[in-house]
Length: 237
Image (cartoon, rainbow, N blue to C red; front, side, top):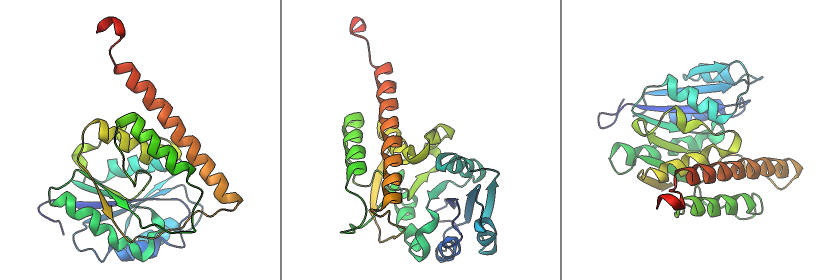
């Protein structure tokens, strides 16, 4: 059932998420204004696709793991809804909080919404990735957002294109945010009580944050080059 004349679709990029995908879909089914739920199975080797289909979601199964940005793009191209919400597969029952991302879009208050998670003292890393993204965003745009790394986002479809998803790895959210701010899109951060798997301080968590740091750093370099290429040369001033 659409809201305020806008049809609403949820896209869930998923890779080996059989433990949580059914709970996430069940929670989304409680939001009556959602018209379609699409799970993009990014080459999973488990039963993610089967469980998603059994839960009532549409499933787009990719033949190999190609990364979150590509999975998001495939979902965007497959789902023509005027409002699109991208969610992680491991939200479980807290996926019902997605309504908070939808309301400002359908109410005309925002062109994009980003979920702002509550602070969880004692969990997570040491803040290196968050500081890099915060300082990088300020450097590139002159603006700050507290939830620049959040993967839970809603968009009016009209502000997106295939180019919006041209970032690899963990750089997708940061890159999309920079592009939106460069285009003066109306972004609203929304407080939510969503929960998903926290990356710990063990060796696996360290590797995860190292990859995240490297992917975001690459985007910062890339966007710096892009920005400098459009600035007027000294001889042109």
